[in-house]
Each structure stands twice: as structure tokens, then as C-alpha cells.
Length: 253
Image 1 (cartoon, rainbow, N blue to C red):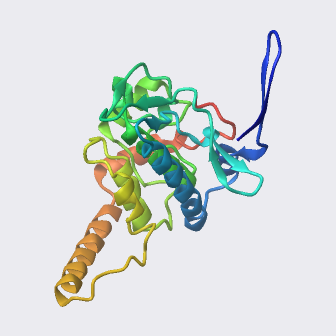
Image 2 (image 1 turned 180 degrees about the vertical axis):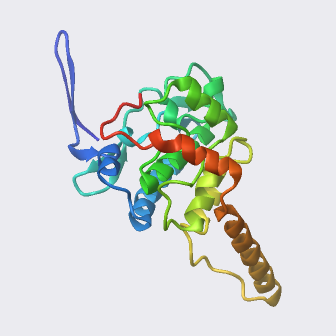
């Protein structure tokens, strides 16, 4: 929030709202519990819903990362630094341009120079992954961009480290957000209604709906159980992920 502006011959000064610190500082201290992460994620999602829902022009942040998520004095979350933001005109699905975002949080389409609402949701998925594990899903800033880009474009990540005790519902949401195909990536409506954010979502009382829900729940449980089994690929990822843990200070730009 801007409170005042001062202009001199050679300077422009902005008086801004005072914040405590950024989210990166918080995550570097310790992993977030699911309850804590959920509260933060809901606020991030609300901000994205507002930005992406603007008419006639949608605002795409394109550089969403913990350093750009500030904690206000009252504890609320504020998204900052819109220097790389893109504007989508009415009817426009994406825009093109050079990648200027921080590569650990960039979406696959951003590495190809395309920007749309989905790239912010991908970044939100990376942030959620980081909050729950203190680890980067595709390689941290200490890795070169070529290593990051290869894994991002392939959607290669694992829950092998740092996710002990994390619910399958949280993992399901992360998978939905970190889907390489932008057309299949979870959008805001689906995220809002996911099991992690809505564990007690209302259901119809009809026998048909109840049976369908039971079948769906059983299928989801089976899929979750299968997902917890370590595959050969995941074991290899474990061996390579020792340096994916976030550094104590920010260097992801």
C-alpha cells in the first residue's frame, strides 16, 4: 500500500506500508505445518484470483516467489514486486516475452517465453512444496538454470525428502499445480475445491451420489497408496536431491 509520494529533481520516493519480513525468511527458519501453510496458501490463492479476474485486463505476476510475499504487521500476506508483471487484454490467453523470473519458480511455458495465469499457479505450487519441505522441487538457486529448466520442462520432482507426515491431499494439490501441460494444470476453481483446502466439502445425500463418492474416495486412496511406494526413478531422485534444500539466505533471482 502506498501512503505518499515525494518527487525531487533527481529522486522519486515512495512511502509504503511497513512489513515484518518476507516468506522466504520464515521458511528458512523451519518447515511450515500443514495448518500454517494452508493459511498462507489460501491468501496467495485469493490474491491470484483477484489479479487473474480483473476485467478487461488480467494481471499476471510472473515472478511469484517467497521473497515477493511479505508478512504485514497484522500477520496478513501481501504480494509485492510487480516489476515483471504481464497484462493480458480481454480474450488474450497468454503473452510472449523473455523470461525474467527466478528460475526455481518458473513454469515450463515460461522457459519457452509464454506467460499466462497458469504460470502463477505453477509458482504457487512450488511455494507450497517449499513451505512443507524446505526443499525446491526442481533444483534450488545453487543449481544452474539449464539443470532447473530440464527438470521443470519434464516435470521431474519427488516427495522423497522433507514430506514425512505430509498428507496425501497436500501432495495431490502439488501434483495438480505442478502439471507440465498448462491445459491440464489445476485452475483456481479446482484448487479452491480440492480435498486439502476443503476436507469437509458438502456432498449430495442421494444414494447415487453417495455411491459415486465412495467409489471415488476408494480410488483416490488406492492411488495415494500407490504414490507412496518408492519407484526406481524416485530412489534415483533421492540420491540427486541432497543439494535441493533451500539455503539460509535468498539467492534465487
